[in-house]
Image (cartoon, rainbow, N blue to C red; front, side, top):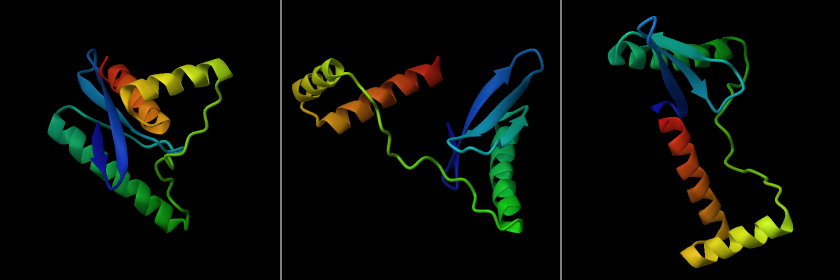
Amino acid sequence: MMKHKGYRGVVTFDDDAGIFHGEVVGIRDVVTFQGKSAAQLTKAFKDSVDEYLAFCSERGKEPDKAFSGKLLVRLSPEQHREIAAAARASGLSLNAWIAHTVRQKAEEELAG
């Protein structure tokens, strides 16, 4: 994952076109970038974030920021009981266990 000024970018590769496509994630606005090499991609990502911030500034618009970090999850009482037990068994708080488990699953998904 790419990072610049608090923004994150994810990248896919189009084998047919021989080009990397990226998108800034975690914001509602659509910010994309592309490049044929790692150096081009990195520059395009940083340029896109900088251009997005300049665009917002020119229009007096507050740029969208990454998510707040707060997430409300609705579970059945049984699910709540099960994950609380799993957290306790692993020696973590319920919040730490959920954050760890979600991060682990997200890393698996993004790697695959």
